Image (cartoon, rainbow, N blue to C red; front, side, top):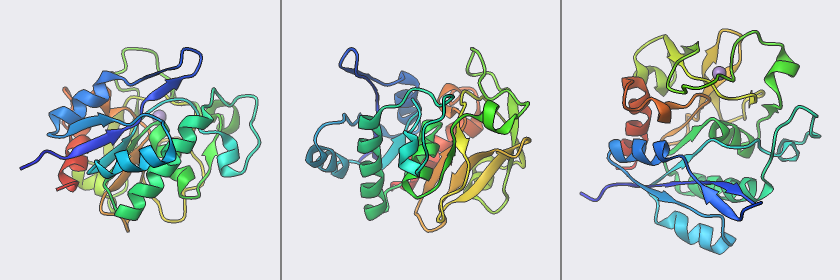
Length: 233
Ligand code: MN
């Protein structure tokens, strides 16, 4: 049987006119039985054509989504943004929803999905929420730093098989108001939403942590990539 092709989006470095993707994402998809395919931010027509080759999509980590995308002014504590990447990924998300393609979002990916579906973000957790938890850890990134509580009604609970799960954390933003069609699937002990899912989709899951750093050492991390690839069948 043909292996599912998973399209994923690189980070852009406009200063050097280059794009890059952490190999961990590609290796995690490969280990799960999929073929990773990088989708560059070219013209809308090319992005649409390229997306037709894909059986599923992975929205990866990266810089902050521009706050204008969720109707806010940019706060001083908002980080670097990349409007070109926002534009491309938001169209990819629309294309994926049209075809009900399986979608996994990681870190920026969960934020992008939430914004694309009409939700909002915390632009900066430390200054806006005063959370005492460490959400921006230092390396090594395969080390866990806080736990999340998994909602039993979510597909994440069937994938991880546990109520409490330890995660790594390298974000300063997070989902604030969940988009109307999304449901929270996990929260950290400070109440921040760390995972979402969309009941009406075949498979649409976003996580705020980074399973790509742990797919080789943690069954729960590998299970997320396997679920994405399996849902494409
Ligand atoms: Mn976190």
